[in-house]
Length: 105
Image (tube, rainbow, N blue to C red; front, side, top):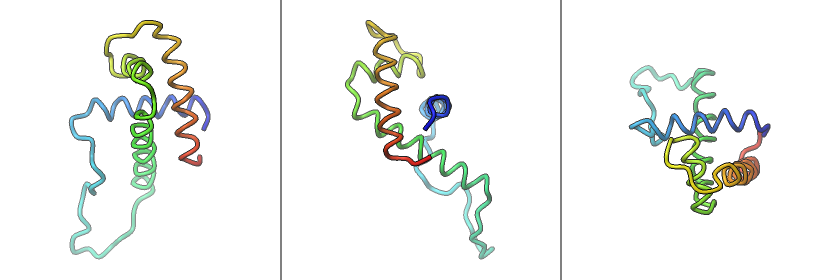
C-alpha cells in the first residue's frame, strides 16, 4: 500500500473513531421483500474501506502504548507524548507494514 493511500485511510480511521456509531457490520438497510441481492459499486467500495479501517484498528493493538498515544495525539487530538514526532513516525511505519501484510491492494 502506498504511504499516501495509507494516510488517507488513517484519516478515515480518525473519522470512524470520532463517530458515535462504529457500525458493527450490520447492513444499513434490509433487502426486505424485494428479493434482490445485488450490491451497488459504492456499497462494495464502502465495505472494502470499512474492512481496511477495522484492520487498522485491530493492528493498533500490536503497537506499544507510547506509539498508540502518538497516533491518538495526531489523529484524535489527545495529548502529545514526549518525542512525539519520532514515536509517530515509527508507529505509522509499523502500522503500514502490518496493514499491508493483511490487506492486498
